[in-house]
Image (cartoon, rainbow over all chains, first blue to last red):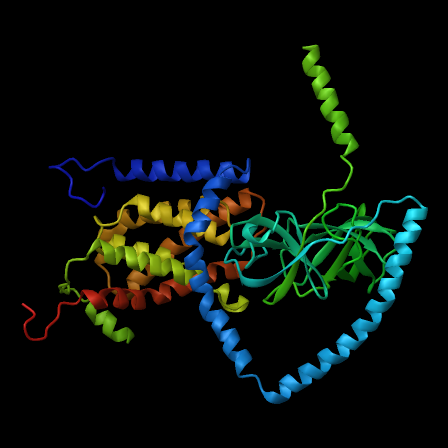
Length: 299
Length: 177
């Protein structure tokens, strides 16, 4: 349209008008996305359209990986093999005791009439690439809604929690790493049983344990595992290790820095763990809704 | 290599073949793919926005060929691919188009080095818009290295200039005319 020659001197809207129109449109989109989370469908549609381009762009790096894997030295492979065999032996022994413990646990829970812990569905996935966006810490994995990935699932690797699935596309999904500034993980300190929430700092090697009182029972080297009270992360997965505790009486809270347990950057295989919706509804929310309903009826 | 492109931009303008619209489209899609290219983390932070560079080139050298709409749509595609806020790249490309159209006659008057200075200013401004949008949405300042990408982009300008012109050179072999 704009490429065809205009009839005589008619040149369409002026430059400033066009600029104003398109910036206004962008601003509307920005607000709709950031504030109200609309435009989900538009995003999904466009994601399907550029999926082939994304896969194509990820290919050189993938094939480089495959090639370097193919050219790995024999000695390296042998060492790897031996290490893995030993690890399997160790894990096997642990697994045997775990089975009996699981049975015992189930039995005890039955006796105490506690809710049974369900095994969760897991989907193995591979990290394809990380986003260019320097403001967030996110990676893209190669499984999507077509493979049964659900938004909100936890993502773990063999050493601990990696993050959470925040957007699902048909064949890809986006994982927000626990080091992202807006990602919170409910945790429990293994040593003291203290509960808290870690937040990302926006940098790869840093988490922050916020809202802990100055005299909280925490030491350097304390292991933090998921507490499981949110229903998203399965309980007992390692999240981070306390690296530094700053206690300043002038502030209400201590500043506690932790380093993540899992390798939260880079590439590799991860496991997507489906979240279970077996938590009872939030009572406060229910009350609020009931109050609102009563108010509406009163009017 | 750099020298060659500089002489190509001397005052007597080089005669080029007419640019087919398909060629412009192909270069823009290629820039999109290159932008999406998976790279190791350390290099990824330094890489420039190639789409922005292409947009500047086409607007400066062929100002009536590229409209706001394709640039804006490419911005939305970048937003989806990047997982950033929807409209963030679109806004920065709209600003880039406006400034590039406004300045294109001026930029054409200069040699390669001064053109690079203009390009770095345009790229920095478009990055600044993105930064303001993200800060308003609650993100944290990602550090000074954020702006290095624009400098790298300006350094790539002579290469982009030469490569984009390569297929448009008139053939001088026998039977060309």
